[in-house]
Length: 86
Image (tube, rainbow, N blue to C red; front, side, top):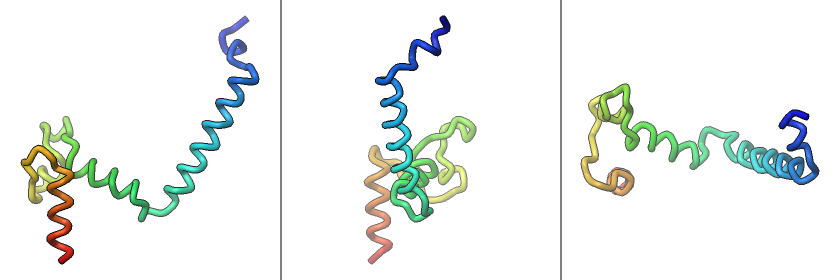
């Protein structure tokens, strides 16, 4: 008997169905590019997360955009956005 058949139980099938339903809900929420989740991920990727290929810099730093050297880059970005919105 292969290990694959050991996981084919009613309980396992229920877990797969729950996972699929959960992923369906997430994908519905991400249908538009204006999703807050996608915006947050884009900001994190471009302004906060250092990239190995860029020698530890963020893409924003590599492009010469304003950097946020403080310990809390999220807070610095929020403060900057608030100042620009006024």
